[in-house]
Length: 191
Length: 206
Image (cartoon, rainbow over all chains, first blue to last red):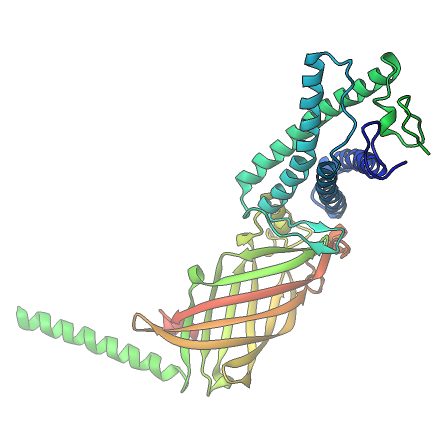
């Protein structure tokens, strides 16, 4: 698999970033659900610390991903078979997913600062506070963070359903070009 | 009429002077009495939680200081901290800290530091040795500090600043699951900047 993207398929870096972030986002939902109803205690603090560390990791990977995407001008295009409204939905959902990749960690980081619970990255270093402690702002950001998490579930579900439709119904290479160890019909050689 | 008023005033003045001289006699040489100015004092603490430095402070303090650079044996400090005034910027955490497994405010509403001895470290630098009581545990604590005096609006004021590290578990702040130090460290870095103004009621400092 080439490192860089081609017009036929996503390269190794893009695929790695895509699937790594998928895995980390799923981890985030698991951690958030485990800690959500716990009283403030060691277990909740530990789970939240992990949730914050993973979130900051996603933020760092999202920056790398955005930069890499900008550096790869020839990336796979949307299939020509898409109807105009489908192109709009595809673009809007991709942009939304990118925005959420940043908005989720940033609102989480901000709400930690507003609550005066600073963020550390895996206990290796402490991040600066983004806002001054403010309980009202914290509650607002907490709501925002949760609401955005549901938006992410909805858009990600749409994204997955669309990929499956391309693969199983339309039988094109949209899903395969993001998968390692596959061959794309348009001739892009995989490993 | 005027003479009677004057004589009453005179008697009152004489009483006041007598009272003042009695108080003055009670104060040892070369020391001054101060009262803590809570509105312009800060008592902060920092503790490590899950790898990050978390901060809080106590907003209500009271205390008296008798201090003289040349009369340290007569110097004394007595500070009372209102546990309910602790503020870490988060309501849930404040409530938890005031709860039975940490400060247990219901049973121990105040913490107190009472000096037993002062030592001079260098010019303007001292160490106060005293008893710190948190919850029902009293331990000796050595606190290095700086002290400088100045005059503000004609009043003598003193500024006492310093920091000391204490172990919360030494005082039982952390029962049950809070005894664990993996997420919330045992060490607590306490820093203070206390402003003392000339004692309003010197008799109280006896």
